[in-house]
Image 1 (cartoon, rainbow, N blue to C red):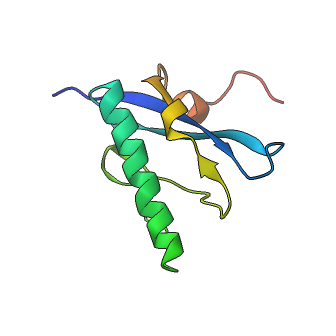
Image 2: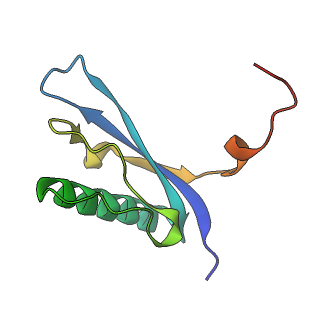
Length: 99
């Protein structure tokens, strides 16, 4: 089975609706549905570890992982969007210019 890189964007907010954003997950999957499921799984594992006072698990198979789990932030999984990540290595390539 050929796995592609996917990006999953999940809206996040706190009780203070002025504080909001998007939590981004990336990794390999065979479909949008699998990407959404994998992102949710790694987040749930990270959240459970944090609640138990344990270290957040690192990157899992397929490159999926969750970092930056914060108390009070809620992820809106019903509004999550997923799609192919066209160039997963673009951030590692040296740019032809300096900033």
